Amino acid sequence: MKQPAVLSVSSNPLVPEPASGTSDEYSRRRAAIEARDARPRRVPAIPPRERQLRVVIDTDAGNEIDDLWALALALRCPERFQIEGFVAANYDNHSPGGGPGSLDTSARLIETVVAQAGLAGKFPVKRGSPPMRYQFEPSESEGVDFLIERAMASTAEDPLWVVGLGAATDIASAYLKEPRIVERVVVFWHFRTEWPKRCWNFNVIGDVRAARLVFHSDLAFVLFDTGTDLTCPMEQSAQWVEYGPLGRFLHEYRLRSEWYQDPKKGFYDLGDLASLVEPSLATWEVVACPEVNWDLAYAFNGTKGEILRCGAIDRDRTFALLEERLRNS
Figure 1: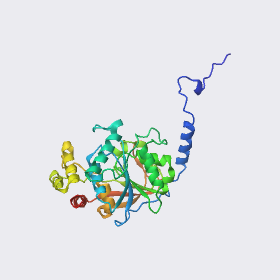
Figure 2: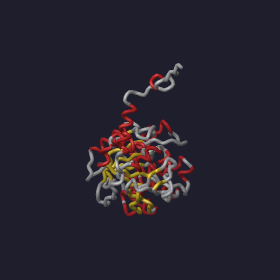
Figure 3: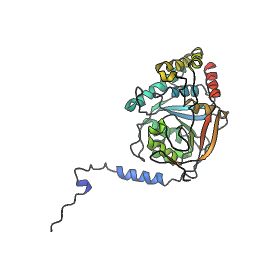
Figure 4: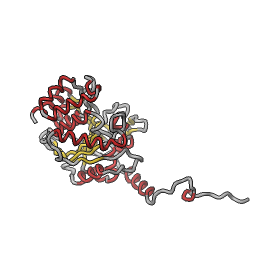
């Protein structure tokens, strides 16, 4: 009896031919990353306030007003932050400029805040990457390459602090592309999750693959897991118009949205920078790092080492710090 012909994958017109080397390269990277042991990952300590930190801020500034307030504080704290540059992060919602245009939108808002601070052109502003397509494939961009370059110019003794205020795409992609940055960076990321139940937040949903990779990696990791209580009544920020162009910009930006003016609105990302400027504002704890399942549930399996978690921040002292820096700049 004649046997039916068997089509190979490469001869089947319904199955596209893989690009040369792509599958092998992906398999090699996956094997290399999965072979890394997260259990001995370094647990970061927040340096004393007198020490200057080298930082790159990765922010979806076009998405939310709180990023702009956080950037303003960072720019007004040169004694604490040696800002190496900014990376514009992706976001995807109904905010103007979201989706494919979000990288450009974020970059323009970063440049606007820098200009309002009187520092136009003083810092590199690089566009980051769209969300990752596959678990072990970096999403390429100039922002990812910039993170790698700045990290590799750092040392374990003087690491680069990558402060993330949006999706984790860029730091995850930098790690996949150049795992040696592990020895030279501290990842400080705003996820504001539903601890200890699930890893749910806008920044996580923006790139779930990237968020999972940060938790599962051997990167030194600070989880900023708070900020909802950082509310600000309109009458408080209205005083800032007397503090120069930057203070005026921060208050008047609230007029673009009813939600930005709501007294219940949290200025979440402001807390990340404030806690680094003045560590005593925050409550810190060393915790076991959970795995993050695809449904975003936390699983404390004891396989991912320990991380530093910020679980609370003082609202009044945070805004007092911002106001003091705006007023005296």
